[in-house]
Structure formats: structure tokens, C-alpha cells
Amino acid sequence: DAKTTQPPSMDCAEGRAANLPCNHSTISGNEYVYWYRQIHSQGPQYIIHGLKNNETNEMASLIITEDRKSSTLILPHATLRDTAVYYCIVRVATGNQFYFGTGTSLTVIP
Amino acid sequence: GAVVSQHPSWVICKSGTSVKIECRSLDFQATTMFWYRQFPKQSLMLMATSNEGSKATYEQGVEKDKFLINHASLTLSTLTVTSAHPEDSSFYICSALLGAYGYTFGSGTRLTVV
Image (tube, rainbow over all chains, first blue to last red; front, side, top):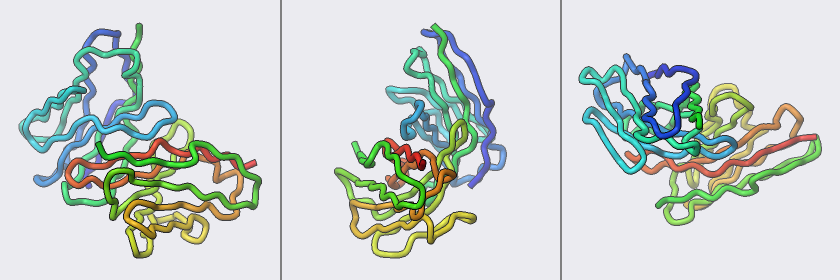
């Protein structure tokens, strides 16, 4: 599975949009981009995933560049409860293991 | 949605004893489950892949005799930390594969070995 690169930490003001970038320059054509988050001392929580089109659900939006070498997770109106570590993972849909990178620690500031 | 229940949520044990952690899929059958370990301020590290009815596959560097995995049914996988030592103290998390939608994770088990 392709490696991903994320900034180690970010801050965001409460109520503002949080934009979390992820680089995956070696992604192959059949690999999806997944985003998970982990609130302190809990198991990771699925947020969203996509292949090449932008995706939106009730939690977030995922913007994937046309060359698929990077993506951005957007939390449209960040709340204090969104403070967590966000992981970007690329994986083939039929693949097995999930390998986590270092993620981005997002702190939402009141 | 698909839920994985992990038990216990925390456990304290004496050095040299064994501890069993259970991971159950509540409303679906999980042919494949995964076990992760996470040290403070670090990312999740995959330990092993657990397949129902067959031997687990361990990641490089993980001692299979120390971390015993059993996946005897489609809804239950267990991780036993044998002869636990303080360096085994960690946060252990299980997950189950949901196909193209990725994984669903348990809530984790905080193991402290004293």
C-alpha cells in the first residue's frame, strides 16, 4: 500500500472549516483514500473514503486532486469534539491490512 | 452499523501472568480480524491478522508465542498476552474488515502490567 504524508499537528478555530492535507504521491490506480480519526484512548472511527471523485457525507468532505497524489479532508464546521488524530490511509479495496501512518493531531480551539 | 465489541476496556495484571482480550463482531460475521498495539503518543501498529478457522498471520517482529491469537468463530477473536511484562503495557485495539468500506474498530483495551 502507498505511503502517506501528513502534517503532525494543526489547530483550527471552533466553527471554522478544518482542512487536513494528505500526500500520497505513489498511490496506484486501484487504491482508495481512507480517512479515520482517533479520539484520545478510543478506537479509530471511519470518516470517509474515495477513489478519484470528491466525496461528502454527514461528517466531512474529501477532495482528491485530479492526479490523485494528494487529498484534503474538510470538516466544514469544526467543534471541540473534533479534536483528535486524523489518519489518511491508502489501500486497495480488496486489500487486507490497514497500516497507519503518524496522522495529524487536530486541536480545535474555542 | 457494524459494531465490534472489545472486552475488557482496561486490565491490570501482575508481571508473569497471562491476559486475554476478546473482540466480538455484534451484528455481522467477521472472517478476518486484526489486532493493533498503540504506545502513548504513537500511531497504531498492526500486530497480526486473524482468520477464522486458521492460524493468525503475524507482522514482522511480533512474537507469535507471546501474543496468542484465536479466531474460533465468525464473531469472536481473542488475543492472549502470555507471561506479560511491564513492556507489554499498551493500548490494544482490534478491528474487523468491512470490505470496500474499510474497517470497524473496537474501543480498545488498556493493559497495564505491574
